[in-house]
Image 1: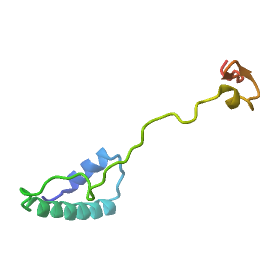
Image 2: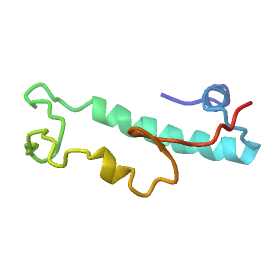
Image 3: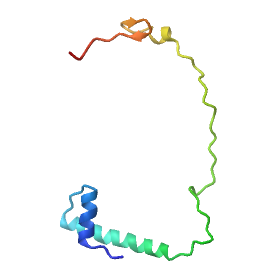
Image 4: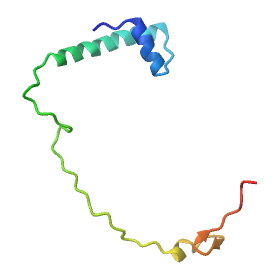
Amino acid sequence: MKLTREGIDRVAVLARLRLTPEEQASLTEDLDHILGYMEKLNQLDTADVEPFNHAVNIENTLRDDRVTNQPNADALLANAPARDATFFKVPKIIE
């Protein structure tokens, strides 16, 4: 698949990029090489290859989601300059 300058212009518009003519030429060549490699990969027979989502078989070791430090409102508000029951009291900033 050969990329044209119009194709590069379209990709640049979608990506919201402003490209100079030199950048367009360079990008055309680079993307053309990438698409060439993709064509090579498409020619490979992958019928007997199982799909996978990670190169290494890793299992997540997740812990139970437990609260280990119960919030204590008095301790949390101990250094507050002003408080109203269990809330921080702050000055009004919007008129």
